[in-house]
Figure: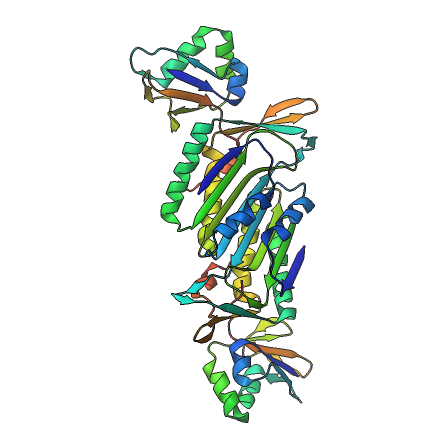
Length: 82
Length: 82
Length: 149
Length: 149
């Protein structure tokens, strides 16, 4: 599954995207917990970025949303365009 | 006192302005009754033009407003600009 | 801070670009253009004639603006309104407003249009192939105005 | 009916005049321009960087537009939004809407801006002399959106 990071989160993690393999369906919250456990950089990045938002295939979803390996997950702070 | 006519009222009366002499203070309604009595043209014009509006020195007023000889009275149908 | 009444036709960019440049430090520029529609209920409009009581139109628009400026903080405004003969598809009215934040411009610009429609002394006459007709004020326009101002 | 994301800077008239000409028969043209303000609370803004998740921004704006079009009858719209580095006083966003009657354009244009502010995937970073800061979403912007859509 492709994960995209944007704005401050991307800056703190140090990359804009990566691919992880999800064998069975998972909640977004689980995926994020696993990412946080990887290392201090991820842990810090997720803790430092407030009120993150989640989108799967361009639709906003919440942490309980269940994703599969073919999805595109995007994680980012609240938008500030316009 | 100067009286200005606009739009349909002006078209029916056949002039855009005229000056009348007002010796003492009068309500607008009185002035209009006197104008109507002048001749059939005035009478018809005032009857034919619906929901007339009145302005004295550029401020909207109603028929009971009292005017003096130094005022400028404007009579017209509801505006339709913009 | 200008109110212009003119016979001459104009295009948007004659005014909007310059206005935006003059208000370099504003974050929001609102504009509204009202144009002559080529038809009125399936009757082809050949032209319209706009009559103007200039002194009062100026006075009334200024009065609305003063009220709106007490309520909404804006940086600048421009009002352009044509009179005389206007052809279908030409611009009749242009309102441009500059403010720091967008909502102030929106409320100011919309409020100004609403009040202008019922207070500014312009009258339109539509010319058709088979005659002319004075345009009535729309009932709906009366409902839009904010009497708290 | 266009949504454009572009790096290149633009001026209003690049779009508004043409849009108005393309919508000859519309009675109302609404436009809103959002610009970079040169200061943020007395800190001089040297530039801003706008990050974009393009696919999602397009999808979300289209979704808002589809909802708004069910509620308000409009003739046409145009959305232009810049990304990349933008200088103070340059335009960031332009929305133009054409409709028969003004209120439809106003409601559509304002609603689109309101939703765009909280849903369209753009992020701004302000660059100052002594560092950069990501711009937070404004609390007030959340209050404006019409959840009935």
